[in-house]
Length: 281
Image 1 (spheres, rainbow, N blue to C red):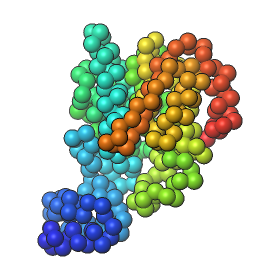
Image 2 (image 1 turned 30 degrees about the vertical axis):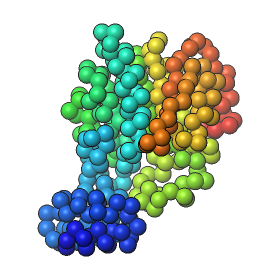
Image 3 (image 1 turned 135 degrees about the vertical axis):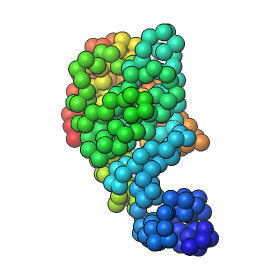
């Protein structure tokens, strides 16, 4: 098949960038038969990244296996914010401990390590398939990947030593999952998408428990939906952080940055937020 014929099939199937995707499929297919099979998969809605086995993110390719969450270009904004904070700490002449929570295939943590030399990088995710990918993706930077839910698998020696805690948690409101593109709904794990009724369940859990892990001047950087950014910043304030929203119009992205203030601040509100407005899910 030619580039034109593949692109036409992808366009009819509703692909947004049919020519770009066609070019990638043609480059990756070893035989005409394999190309036919790959095109058929894409026409059926399988994410391109799951078909070719990699995703491009922040100018690098990362291993992606079928069934895992695919890194989104908008998360480049999160990388930029976290890298800036890490560089400021590294400028003081000491090592920087970075934890990438809800790491997926590890693209965010690896991209930060690539931007900031000497980072002591740890990552964690609940999805065993994503963890397997992340271990391969973080190997060039010496990153350690832990399998488990949020902070549970992290080694205790990291308590009160994490300088930058970065996370791209699930933040799609539950009722809006059905509005996502079919390739996300049908081929990526719901646990990587569903953020609860208001999209902030996991954000609250991370912010509530992060105080036990952040260093004295540590920062929390969390990706959120653009509509939920102000609400997320308010939640962080109530949990005892100085918080600010950051946005990137180019990436249609938002993040909240929180720096811990009084370690005792927000303790009671942390419990009430997690038990009432957002649940423990």
